[in-house]
Image 1: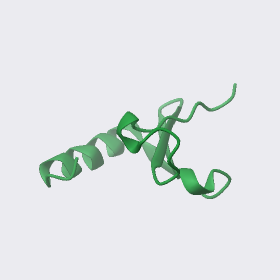
Image 2: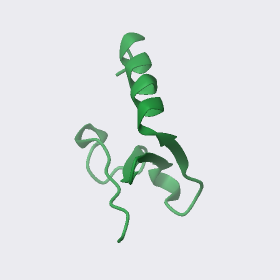
Image 3: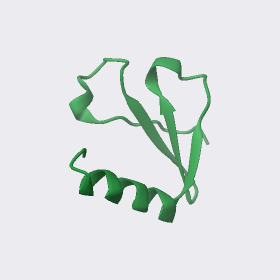
Length: 61
């Protein structure tokens, strides 16, 4: 099954300056939309939840 990458609707549509996210089972994947064939960061779902909550708490999300 192909990985379905998504990015925020607030990123401006076809703008390449964004982080894309996808799910692979219980793992959250992150990549730079400018370099789709580049490295991919992998996080367990619980780790990603903590990461996103920290961003929100810092007023950046």
